[in-house]
Image (spheres, rainbow, N blue to C red):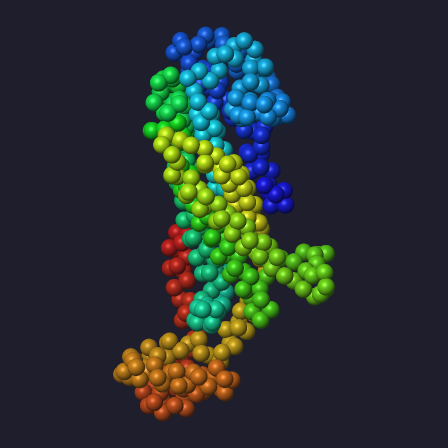
Length: 435
């Protein structure tokens, strides 16, 4: 985790202090359940809670023990025994390391998901506000980056809203998918611990019992989680790339907010660069890069191996921290985005009316001209306009193949800009409902 691209709420989830506190809670809740079943003394369970809750786990001491024993969970349990005293012999009864590690990881992933869900909700609010602000701000729609037909900037943003709304649903599903606990023992058979202990721990930690944990929780769950993060990151990049294109000097229809005192280049004082959205493009690549390792973690040997462990120690924190930061940054970009309707209008008029070519084509076919002939007529008049040799409407009015079937007034009426955005309200209702 790089501090430059991290936010404290998310990094706290992955801190050693947080991890060891979760480990302790798993062990203490298990002790409670064991005490209820009469497996260990009730007084021992109370002592474990009281002394563990009062303690601050010594990270350096745990690391010192691990350097000797070469096992992180044993190192923690040894340190916990130093804190709890003789009753520590009742800790970890019938459990295996993965019961602690996997349940803890899923607690962390669920908490990270909650932050990402909140991030998405914040981004959606910003997108909705800006979409309604520009619902009728006509701008150029582009295909292959070439002028196509008019749309509105609000419709553009409504499309991104719909995409991130889908991402919100995906993230909630991924959270649900990964919210399971395992306290099932060495190969997941509950041979030395009753399933009711797992049920108790799962409930206490806000999780559900894993139906079959073969010592580890199946990694298809985690694969879906990280794949979802990758999809969300791709949506972040798509919006970031759109803004980057719109900020190009030749386009300049929208621009990242440029604050007072900000500098764009060490060499060229005039520069105002899309640095935030370029950064978001890079961060999205990083998050997507964690998807393949998560998929490869699914195929573990038999009941378990630890080939997934080193991967998850890296991608768990890095993927969630990076995406959390990216979503917060994107929300700020959208919220402060500077929009230039006057430049949008200039760009709409750059091609001398060519953006109305489809409407002319359709009108000719409705006037009785064969489609192939109509296409040839429209294209024949469009090509000179590309070369700067006149206005599209003027050329059409002079073409006998057009004037022979359409009167000048009807032809001019085909160049009405409002025609293209007449269903903006319908699109908005589909996206936002009746609001």
